[in-house]
Length: 64
Image (cartoon, rainbow, N blue to C red; front, side, top):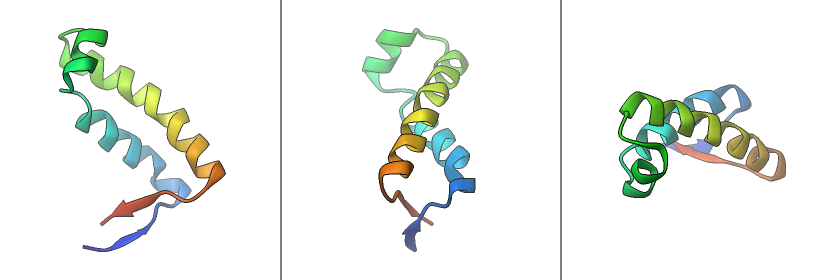
């Protein structure tokens, strides 16, 4: 495994990974409902500006 900076072009992939990883979180299920695909879409829309904002303020590391 390699730890390195996430490039701006890799942000969408990182967002998709976060959305999938947080999809079954009980809090997210309670907040966004039982539809798995709908929850994934909501979480993806949420995490995209979050990661973009974090990238503007500093580095984001990824494990590859």
